[in-house]
Amino acid sequence: MCSINDGGAEGFEENKSNEPLELKCRKCLVKFGDVVLRQKDVYCKSCFVPMVTHKFRATLGKSKLVNRGERVLVCVSGSQCSVALLHLVWTGLQQSTFKKLTFDPVILYIDESDLFDYPQNQRNKIQKVFNNYGLNYNIVSLAAALYSDNCLDQHSAVDSHKDKLQNIFKNISDLTLKEDMLMKLRKHAITKLAKLLKCTRILTAENEHKLSIRLLSNVALGRGSQILLDIGLVVNDKNNVKTSLVTIRPLRDLSAKEISYYVLFNKLEDFVRSNFLTATSEDDSIQKTTEQFVNNLQVEFPSTVSTIFRTGEKISQKTLTKAYCLLCQGIMDVDVPPSSAMEATKYSKYVSLMGIKALKLSLNDTNDKECNENKCSSCNCKNKQISKEEFMESLCYACKHIIQDTDSLDDLPSEILMLHRENLQFKKMEEQIKDFLLLQNVQDVKKIPSFLVMQIHIQKDLNQLDKKR
Amino acid sequence: MENSDSLKITTEFTSGLQILFGHVKKHNVVLPKMEKPWTLGLLLFWIKDNLLIEKDKCDLFMKGNTVRPGIIVAVNDQDWELLGNLNYQIKNNDNITFISTLHGG
Image (cartoon, rainbow over all chains, first blue to last red; front, top):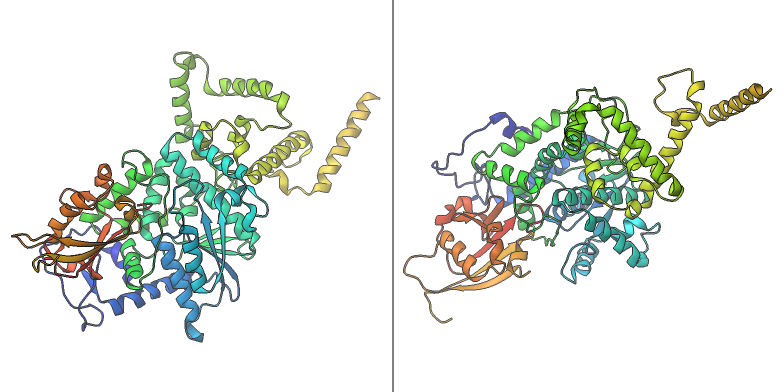
């Protein structure tokens, strides 16, 4: 409805606190209001709840991506937003036939109690809530989801997995990176579980507020190219829409306040949802500083969040080369021009590390040298262990920062490491058959049919034989 | 308390805020008799002195003389912006809810 766009169109309208608010609901004009939205619109309880439901359905309907009978993974963390999402989905299923949601929801709760102190009975309480809804649900611990192959089995939680997970975060000293890593691992776990549960759509519960904070902190973290992936309504895993995983964020048009009151009016119970930033000082991490910045602005300029949000929506990806970061699956900036910001940062870091010597050698020269040295030191154990430098090459700028801190790559989920090995092999193959390729610009060796590669290898062997003769 | 002038209210802290209050969501509170009428503004300071357990994390709950931006206050499920914000006079049996919209509390 048009009310969604109102916030953006107003621009920065200053808060007129002196003007007395209307006491009656602006929609029905009968009942006294209960909620004030955008600091001027008053709604009563009985008009407010349908409005939220309507916005939710409109966002979901707009995408037209959920087909009849499709299995949809609903990610519930226990936070207010996700509790609201669960209730909205459930209400949608109770509606009369022509309004009814027609997909088949599967609820997922990822238990992170290995990392944070939750009240003892939290898991049971959440289980009870899920039971009351009577929908299919799965409760999986994060460690099991990341490391175990049969993580849907309730008893698959092994201590070694737990240690691995805790190890990862022990090695990262910076709060900003810790939180970033957790987000990426969580995403990895959700994607994996969605595949296991044969779901093709994922619903997550981020609201407008959260997404605009994420937008700004992503820019600060150097994830600018991945904004669309992290805040978009529909995010595609791969290019083919029909068969691949699609993440949908149906609450993205609702403000934090709308959700809080939806939860309050429906008397829903929410749960403690910690992360690394819980109860930390505002100056300790980029995410928290951004949050504070947005919130403080929002108090005086009620359209802050929607302005950030609508601006972010217009940012789109212009690169066509598809290289994905191993860790976050985000698009990587390959083929950057020599004067890009990324190169500049690299160079400045390098100069500050090397001092005056750096000026004598150009960056590229030393880069090569460094690579060679690393290869020499790591070739002995290359078969088993993955060298960090090689791994870093297939990461995006922001993920490089995370991995830089960790001592060992062994604690990462095995799928990521597998993928890395595969990539390395392809790279090797590319190197081998490079001379035989007619198309110098073939970007992806993976796309060359395997029989061709075989042929090339045979050709190569024959050539060598010829030479010997 | 038998004193008719003291106010009996309940305060609720949800979506993460309860961490600051010893993981207890609902508190039944009796406000002592006072010469001035109890307003929300005064209640905030009273909460800070009497209910808040993690005293050093006070700035996660309050900022200046009001709540931290991002925390929503509702009195009997009604928005405090409709009731005059800090100047609202608390009545007997009011249920005052504090909801955090900040991630991770």
